[in-house]
Length: 92
Image 1: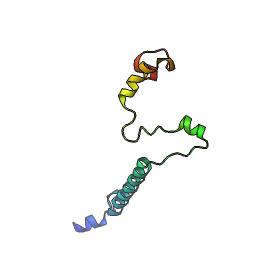
Image 2 (image 1 turned 180 degrees about the vertical axis):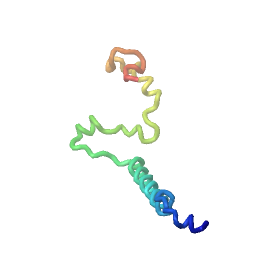
Image 3 (image 1 turned 45 degrees about the vertical axis):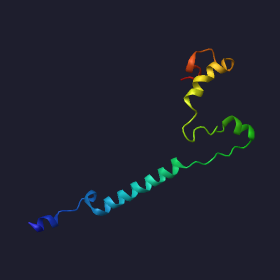
């Protein structure tokens, strides 16, 4: 009986090397994803005008711009927003 088991060809997905390689690959992908999506690097724009138009307000760093600000803007500055009511002015 032991000769029958020894004579069977090994499956590549069952070998220890395969699982070690797959695990290492998953760890490397996880480290790459962590480094890619958690870094906080400011974007450098070509001009001050581009920075003003496309730059970040910095509000998204901790929790974003508070909900009550979005709720109050239509009431405080209706002349600057489209003729809709409530948060639909912001396309929400």
